[in-house]
Figure (spheres, rainbow, N blue to C red):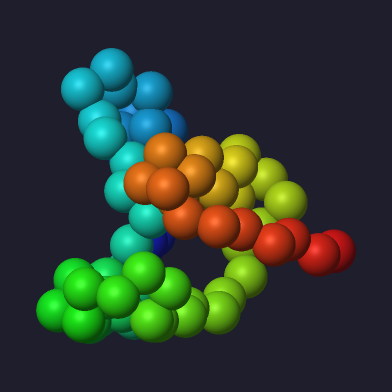
Length: 74
């Protein structure tokens, strides 16, 4: 839970050139591990939503880079 004085830190981190964005989070990482263990393409599914903003675009780009299928609806 960021306080107002912490907000500038987010922009600083996002604008660094040595940052790698990975589509993840606790649930997504659990599914990723299960998929790896099963070794069967498409054996797992993760459902979620992203915002229509810069962070949502970064998440979509990171998932596409990892070879994941996206179906977006607004």
